[in-house]
Image (cartoon, rainbow, N blue to C red; front, side):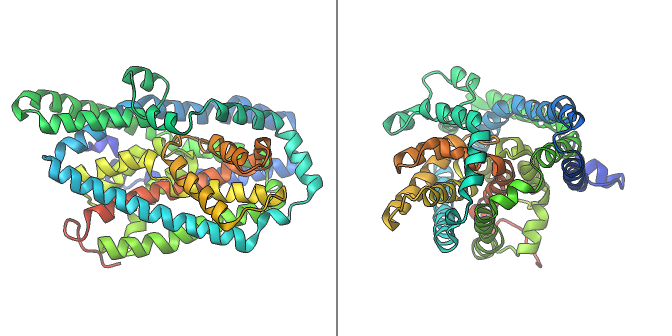
Length: 438
């Protein structure tokens, strides 16, 4: 069971204090406004650079590092425990098939929406070439690093083989989350099949590791409002609103696609397959949505999502732990949308006309690429660079969108995490959850 210490909101609600998710929202708004004010009043000033480099930047990084420090044990323990709680392979197979089906369904819908919007709006046709050259020049170093990283990323059969770790400790040391999850899934299946009496002590130990990890994460999460403030201040103080205006059509296309998936597709699916009203569902997931938006990391948001699934949505632990730990890496609706729109936008800008079949292939690659995308900030950019090269667009063109990537990363991560929770509710179905009036 998730402890009360892993849920800072619980203690604060009992004490009548400002709930944690509202503190996070306040930090987000304050960081946004103060960052915009600093950018407008003192753009390029030394004191702004000093604050972002030595104050707010380190605060945000300390918060993320503390969470990432605990991600590997959390993913392993939560997935093994979730699989073990299934009780038998028949239940595991049923939940696994439903998870796979709903993941494929939402991913397919997401890429169709992205494909329709990017061809309707054609954002790549409206960027000023002079502005584009300036943005490419200023981002050349960052773009070059991403392109270099993409060349080191395995593809084809090698990428498939890479998800099966030859050494799980090396995979953990290299932050290969997908490989660690494959090992945890196999380990959990082994515990289900093994004689229950012989693995009972081991199961209790792993459950204890999960409890300790969640307790530590509960302490770290208390820093979230300060970290959220720091993230937003850095983003707006550095870029302001100017970069959004320059790439307005691209930003609008991505956010429009994400909004349709979030506000139309998710509520319909949750209502049809889980019997939940959209108001009740979104009220229950507001804390993980805020955490996902501010950190731009689905892995960092996993503890908050697990807590919301169990305590707010009242989902069975065995289902929520399984679906959410798998979904943190494998279900990337927002990432697939962003990657597809980004590739087609840059192709339009550079005059590379892609047929509908080629665009469909790009979207399919985005779905598959999203499965292996790291659940960390900017984890999808190397995948975009790989796809650009495959369709004849210079990979360094990714520099054109680096200025707005942080904001879009925050938005697509929020969609990814909300999608994980929606799938958990859909996999649970109508029979195992309380009725909602919303």
